[in-house]
Image 1: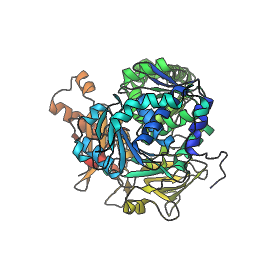
Image 2 (image 1 turned 60 degrees about the horizontal axis):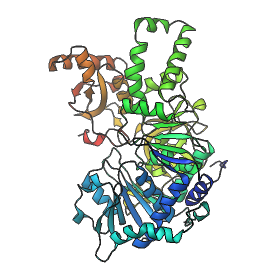
Image 3 (image 1 turned 90 degrees about the vertical axis):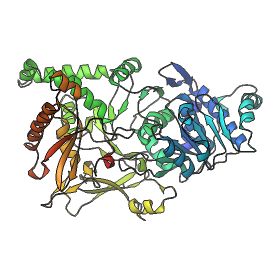
Image 4 (image 1 turned 90 degrees about the horizontal axis):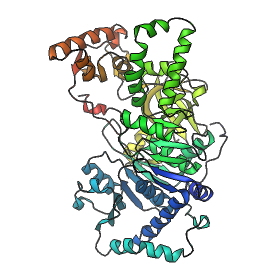
Length: 557
């Protein structure tokens, strides 16, 4: 491991320092309503939450579960919990009620903070250990154990706070407990494509490792702006749309709406973020719906074949695309899944400021990152300075399972030593489950998941993700999965029904004939052992995780 050019600070101490130093700066804005808080006002709300947790009897190291939409109360609950010294258990609001209840129980949560709309679908009797349940949006006590006085504690909170700070809450009053960085600060339950949710134990070192790297490379900085469009309960959005900007003194805008293209483009125009985190689907939709039709037109298509004129057209497209994303960002960081190769190559060709990173919840989440000007298409960046990487391949030129170790690697899975032992060895190496290669400068090139790799009858390794990337670029294909059925490769396709309708392809027979032509076109550009035998149409979109990855396990049998 190389010596890092930055130090990893105490996780809780990062926020004590930031809230004091950035007291008068705007901290949070809830975009739908315009509600705003300064860092000072935010710190005051956190102080009130500390008083509430203390009155309930929550101690440092106890667990507090939260489940709700991305709102100011949600961010307050998260930061109030960790700066108090308790362990936060964020639960994705997309989980079904039975899973939410299971996670609350499995995590041994003492307190459950939840949106009212989610609580309405949870059976109170299914919660085994919690001392109480409080709604995030309405601040109402929905349940309390016998002998608890949550209702009274909530009612008297403002009076107790004013008694404690009769001259107002000031920067010098921001004093947080210091837990060691090697202690668990968060249990984050995964929502991966394999269908089994595990509680990832993240330490202060793991969380601070991500934040301090973001501050070092200036992903966020004092007075920068970020538009949080990813779920903050997910490690990716949490680390870089919340934890890092709060440590930097940035201004966070919480989108608070489903990021449809129309909603997102308006918010980007209004906020003009300094940096944007997104999943590949956002860029892929814009490329397919706006850029591809433009460059496919006759006159422009021919112009792009003429030297010098193509540079002029590309610069116009780049300028238009940059303005669509707000016009003031320094780079777009793409993560959560692989970016379509055609889209990536085009964006690189027009010099669009983007890069593709790599991470997983088990690393809180970041593993590799390279600034966009140094980014190599097809890669997912260089390993972080505080991390090491290797590929388990006998031949350096062939893909092997990527393994990592270092500051960001989790402590293990909560109450699941068997699952921990399968991925984490006694030397600290974490098996990521991703297949790829590593260059001499520690740049990672991924090929696919080890669990999805298919071994052909001729002994060839088939990575379905690579075939899917080509299939998704075909006309009338919205999204796809390539699976093995009866020893043959089959393409499951959810069609672009709007495009089919626009071309008058409406009958089932016409759609099947169109897909057969697509199958033949695909087979002409893939290796013989990657060819698919048929396409099966899917009437509905594939079910996805909150980061928009298809839940592959639902369709592989």
